[in-house]
Every structure is written in C-alpha cells, then in structure tokens.
Amino acid sequence: MHVGAHIELKEVADAGYGRAEARTNAAHVKRHDGEPGFALKGIHEQAGRQLTLNLHRIPAPVQEGKLLPTLQHHMRARWLLTNGETGFERGCDRHTEILRLNSRPCAGLIRSSGMRFRSSTLGYVLLSLFSLVSCNSMKHAPLQTVPHVDLNRYVGDWFVFAHIPYSLEKGKVGTLDRYALRPDGKMDNIFLFRRGSLDAPLEQWKGVAWVHNKATNAEWRVQFLWPLRVPYLIIDLDKDYQWSVIGYPNRKLAWVLSRKPVLDAATYRGILERMAKQGYDTRLLAKVPQKSE
Image 1: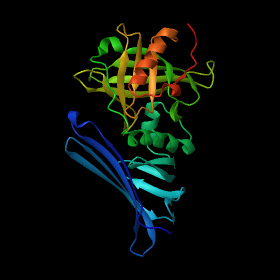
Image 2 (image 1 turned 120 degrees about the vertical axis):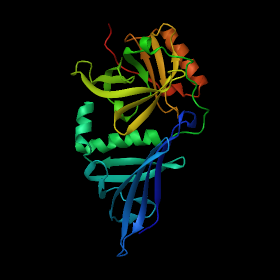
Image 3 (image 1 turned 90 degrees about the horizontal axis):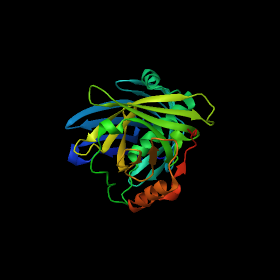
Image 4 (image 1 turned 135 degrees about the horizontal axis):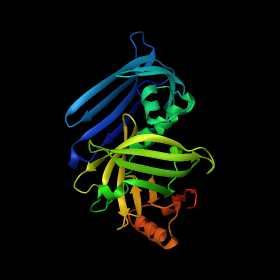
C-alpha cells in the first residue's frame, strides 16, 4: 500500500489575454481511522475569480506507483457525477494523463450537445479531452497563427480533408465542421459525421466557439462539453477562404479543412510543407474519406 501520491491536471491560457487556469488535484490521504483514501479537489480560476469544487473523499486501496484503475467514487460539486470508475497511470511532462474513467455525468448537458455515449465510454471521451488540455508539449515555440481572419468569410461549411487521428474522431468519415455567427458574438459549431461508412446515417455534435484573440480572430476556443475548452488555432488559410489549417499547441492534433470534399495534390503538398516548418510531423496526418461531389 502506498500513501501520498499526487496528481495534477492543469491548463493555463496565454497570460497576454488574461490568466485562465483550471486544475484538478488528486492525492491519497488518510482518514481519521487511518485507512487510506482518495481526495479530489477541482479549482477553476479566471481573471482573478476562483471557484473551488470540493469533491468527496472515500476509502480506496492503492497499488505502489499508481492509483488503482477501479477506484469507486462520488463527485459532488455544482453538478453530480454518479458512481464511476477512474484510473490514473502515466505521466505527461509535469502533468498526468488520465487513461480511463467510466461515469455517467451531466446527462442533460451531454444530451444538449447531441453527443450520445454508452456509460462505459463516456468517461474515456471526457478524459481524452482532459488529456488534450493537460498535456501540452514544451518542445516547440508557440504556433504562429495567420495575421487576420475575416469571420464573416470564414463561417460556413468546412469538410475535414485530413487530420491527425485521435480517439474522439476514430472511425468517423464524411466529417464536416459548420460554423455560424450568433448575436452574442460567439459561433455555433456543429460537427457532422458518419460512423464507419459514407452510407451510414448522418450524426452531429453541437458545440460553441468563440474568438480568444480578437486582434487577429485566428485564435479560438471550442467547447462541446462543459467545462472543457479546446484551443483552435488557424495557422494557415487560403486567401480566398477555400481551405484552412487548424493547429493545436502541442502539435498532437491538426485538421486540414476545405470548402470542397477534395483538395488538389499541389495545394495539399504546400500545406504539409508549411506545417512541417511549424514543427508538425506531417507523416501523422491521414486523409478523411469524403463523398465526392
């Protein structure tokens, strides 16, 4: 048995746009009866405002070097997460990547987003997002976005021509991002896709996007499931707004978007060359099957 392990997940936005920090601390503790337990504390800070979410501590057996992958817990804050299982295994830089969590939280919020998951896979989806937020690489300089984006020209439909595959989009084909400006200045973001086959039924997830850097309009935040927000960096853009490249700070994710289902080979080759200059391993990109026009 081991007592005293500590895990922290943390995201800090660019201080140039106001400090925004979210972290989750997880540590083994001893209860008053001396039994090992597990404590979770979630903190959200933005622009000097701090909201602390204290979550229940329960007994939990611990294996040397890691938290037991089937740790039962209740998490209560402003919302309720029902019984679930969680597992923490490996580190990522100074942070920790959560590998597995099974739970059934925030059902209303999830339904409103259009996401439908089995309870056994929902936590994996959540933790895929947490790991993206938490494990930022320090190997490269910050990605350079384009100088300016005209939002009125940018909104509309974008086919996902290619991307760096990851868990949430695994097996999805015919993918398309749809953006629409809202009266409040934000954008509706609808992700349309088919599962496994271009003949499968069309499904969608509903999210929201907003401009994070208003000086350029090239740095956004996208949110499909509260409270998780993902950076959206427009790092390359056609002068006629016929294609776009979306980057992620740690270079583990990228999307090549096109107004049409296909891009000509010369254009795509040029995109890959510019991505490589920004530190991307372009061998990781894969084309997404799309229906031809």
